[in-house]
Image (spheres, rainbow over the protein chains, first blue to last red):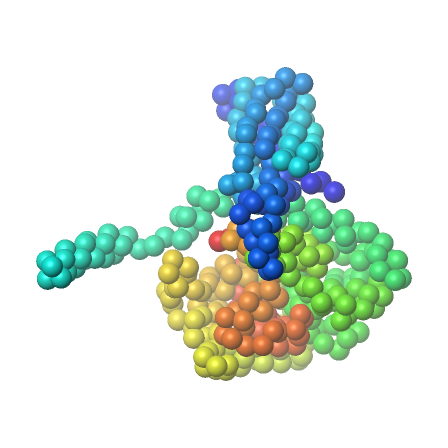
Length: 102
Length: 272
């Protein structure tokens, strides 16, 4: 199952528009369950995107980002670039997706 | 002191009224701004999961849902949602997508209906992920993206379901003496900033609502189907839980879908 959806296409000005959706519960650590116990925080802390193994985007996240987050950004690149997105979370979880720029 | 404070409060509340009155709340502009990019819809992740569940060999009989008939023949998913609800000969019933899914999963895959209906919807208050049923439903529905809303209307039982749905729509019931029409029977009604479609007449309001469901409800962080929409509305009317796929909900969906005829499905939807 594609737990991360990554796609990228060439837009005006030599830019590549990258769009990604990530499956993640993004628990804030502030929510309580039905018995009143705090649900432990579980959120993505870092997302890195590389193009042809060169880092083009890196972001730090926290518990204020929504569940199943969406990320979009532009970078200067070319059609055919091999993109790789990797996220890491605060429970040492990680996931990746790869896509070629169209 | 009180006399001094009161005029101040009055003036500030008048000023606020003026600000709100200057511009009609425009939910469409807000929607375009927030959900305008269809690639940004997390329902797409759930559609993928639903596709996998649909094609996987599951249940006591170990067969995939590709053996099911959703109205256009065995294994066909493209365009089936656009023509539902419809009459099915094998069950001698009018069925919507979700009641048909239960039929398929019980008769073809061998699941137990009561077991399937135990957990139909993700509980958004517990930050749950969508259930398998929700994922499968949005996968099937998304295969009618861009198509005309074209429910089957020819069979007498289909006509009957629409009539029953219409009667239910106007039927006041429950401790608050509510009908669907109490909220959805007049133009330009809203609760706070939420517009309430007028489904008492055929046309754009019904087309927009039906055409955008199943939808990813951002406030639930989950995909919601038409069955959930009806169940949730009935809950707001303080009625007992509507059983998943019950004839009551199917009739209401048949009526609403008939009101939405000739609209366009934009699926999966994304909303508040």
